[in-house]
Amino acid sequence: MLRTRIRFLGWRALLLVCSFLLVGCAIVDEKIENIDCQYKLRNVHRADDCARIDRIINSAALGEVIKIGSPVHPEYHFTVKNLDVLDEIHPQILYEDARAESADPRRVFNYANPKFSIEYDTVDITALIEVLVRFKITSGAKLFYKPQGEPEQDITHLVDANGNVALKTKIRRGQEYIYAKVVSGKVQRHIRINVYSQAVTDIDKTEY
Image 1 (cartoon, rainbow, N blue to C red):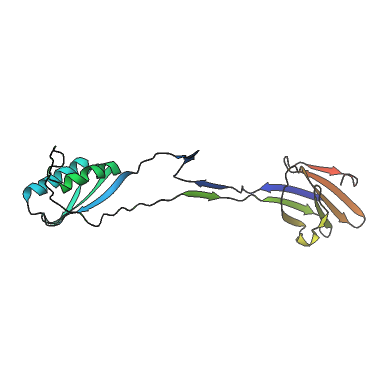
Image 2 (cartoon, helix red, strand yellow; image 1 turned 45 degrees about the vertical axis):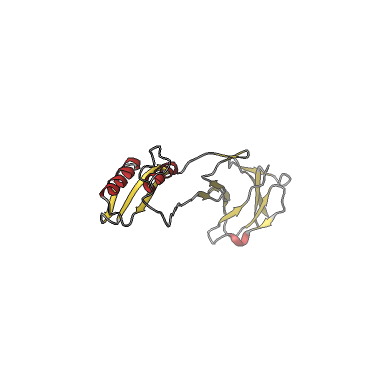
């Protein structure tokens, strides 16, 4: 008696998704958006300057602006749409009349320690395909395994006490069949296994 079953356990693949898409020699123009900002101001003693900074940041922010610290040393936490917004509000903070058509705008603040922090990540996936051939033979018999186009292999040592064996194998491109032979005394039986349909067919020795 010889029974067999093939089980496909998975696929082997590698998928890498990158946030930068290359098209020919051009890079897709994708702006950085929804930027979280932290602005610290020091020695803001004039009430007009305090009000102006509040107005600038609140008009540029998306959603809530969190203001902490003291009136003289305020700190703002907020989110802007993109880097263009930061470029726009930067001179407005530095100069009292940055939006006015003034040849000599009055500078109110210096700036120091500009920082920009961003995280990039990607996604990948790995998997594995295994072809597992299961045989069930008469206890005490010998089992031989022969992939199509390859030499015969004696796999009797893999058979357990109950006549069961699970054999990991590979399927080559173009391969359709796996062959097996069981021998008990002077009796032999040959089978052919279709790797696609898993159909098992009894064959004679010449076909083996």
